[in-house]
Image (cartoon, rainbow, N blue to C red):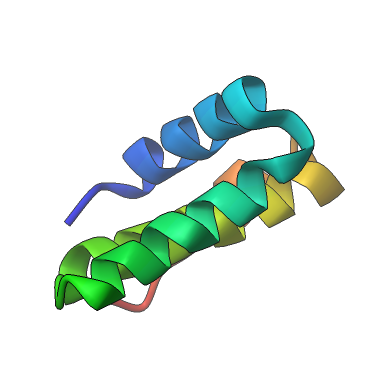
Length: 70
């Protein structure tokens, strides 16, 4: 399982690379992992999707406040 820091870095990279469609790309990747029955990677992509959404709302404050329960 990727660390929280790793998830935030991937989310920031996704925003840089994919811009306005970063969330859609993350969801597509999560769905692909579901199709391949890879639950761990599906959860990681859903965490990235959440981080992207939070970064869009509060770019500087979001990262330190995100916690995971998994």
